[in-house]
Image 1 (cartoon, rainbow, N blue to C red):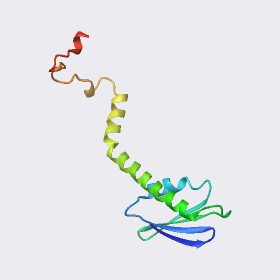
Image 2 (cartoon, rainbow, N blue to C red):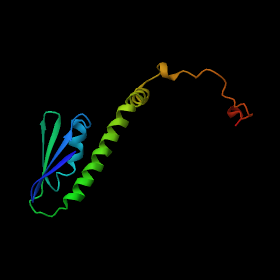
Image 3 (cartoon, one colour):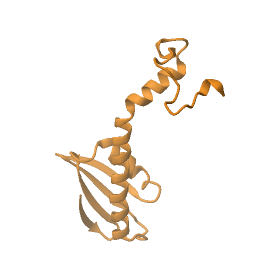
Image 4 (cartoon, helix red, strand yellow):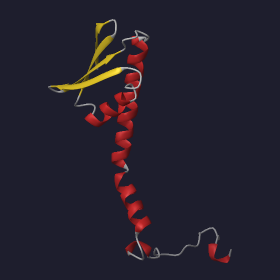
Length: 121
């Protein structure tokens, strides 16, 4: 990530698009739109984000630090979402299924080798 001050009210941030997806960048900067003016463009293999605060009420170092943290947060959320996609699909299929292949009794004995027998409770 390369941060370049434009003037007192604006900074330009270049973000490598091979590290962060478009979704991650847009989700991250969505939250800054309420307080700042945010513009997102693409240049070659970079997202170019221009953030402006016309009121000059910001601390640029603090904002950049928060952006770095937010990018990592949304990237982690994307990774977790991709890794758990199949599990979520199975849970949704099971939730809406009526007497299907998922309703079979698992094979084997439920008894615990240390003598716990749930059927006697």
